Image (cartoon, rainbow, N blue to C red; front, side, top):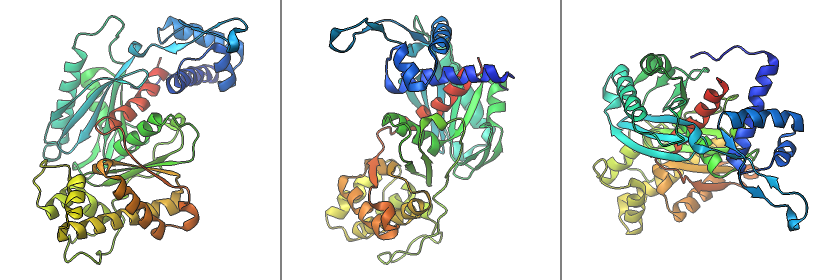
Length: 392
């Protein structure tokens, strides 16, 4: 669905609306005066914006914020009404569809998973399954304040076009030039936005950290392959689509501890879940592979100890290259590495410092993702919410 054409003045008004919503979402209830100061908006502009947002039910002005020391006139606080808008967000993975109903404040109302053989079926079959899932969710009973969904946000691996509508290349699921938004919009009559899953997860992590305008955060997603995204502010979700996508194509040499290994020595091929499971002799879904790898290595199992050293080293190579190029200050590990121990992070950071330029590693923080199972849906919903609010 194409956005309406607007005059420059109307476009500025839309941007101001989004700034107010974003400020209340990221920093909690605030008075009009506080918003004027933090957003550098005139009081007359704020009055018009608040009137519009109140009329649409996106915010309310209940509750009282008392002045410091009890002196002065109390101010009413503006706050979001989370239930006033929601997005149906679906993350497409090789083996299924992870969905969430995400509210205006980016909290998750409901979530679930539908098993579906995405990687072994034609793209149209998957999109039909997504459409059926969304139709079912839209038909669920809603609460008193809940309207229908504002739209659908899709998180998909690989590359997406600049308009965030087409999957250009997604090798892990075998897709190439799939018009996701057109297909779903025709069936659902709802606007659809499509986003890279690693970047969506990065946005969600930055939102979780409540960081705005901070030094760059690098999110690394490793499960089927290895993707990454770097961002410095959630305010940039509409302006910048990619800075980084696939780290997994970085070539690596065979590790000294490895007696053998895959013929494909790209980074993503030797740090993903399937490879680690195969070396450890695990069946798919039998155990969380990284904690199991660590347990066996600590128990003195020789093959596991070699695999542990190899995995840490390969990850350090990829992250070291990203650090040299992009100079992030925080790195968040997602996917299977979100379950890694403090020891794993310490070993990885020590190896990173041997790989990357010293001046770039002095203040690096390594964190584990706190949004496993939700990050892609929340991040895609963040992008979708802003786009869909801008349509009105």
